[in-house]
Amino acid sequence: MMISGGIAAVALALVAALHVVWAFSPWPLASRADFARLVVGVPEDGLPSRPLTLLVAGLIAAAGYVVAARAALLPEVGPSWVVEVGAFVVAGVLGLRGAAGLVSSGMRGGAAPDFDRLDLRYYSPLCLVLAGLTLWVALASGG
Image (cartoon, rainbow, N blue to C red; front, side):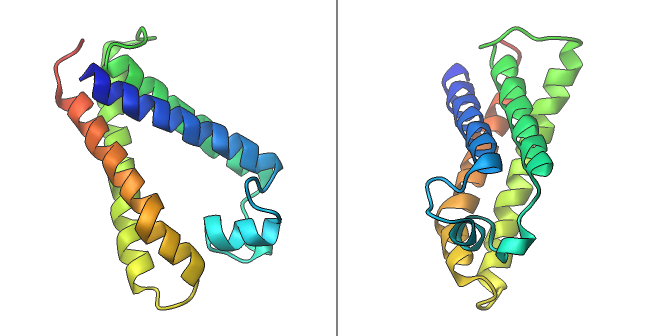
């Protein structure tokens, strides 16, 4: 459980950090237009705002903490039920994102072909793997 939790928590921390970077830069892409097309699947003027992107980064970081705490890699802060329930919530959200991405990107039919290709190949499978790791940690008895 500790290894699964560690992998999931580190991956979530990295994804959160990437969202912080994306709030200020289109890295690793050259332009915001390329970033919008490949990473978000929207026109450049449809990109989320900086505050919204930072909020998402914070939520992903919190999810990483919950997974790490449930796996006994970090101390629990607050009532233990928050971490227990939170791990199931994180697994559910990641599972829904992964499944929804597979369905929507598989059925979209060319609306955002570059994003859809990357979503089917990388983004959605990553969410599903993280959902599985997190569910494993959530189901395991504490510590």
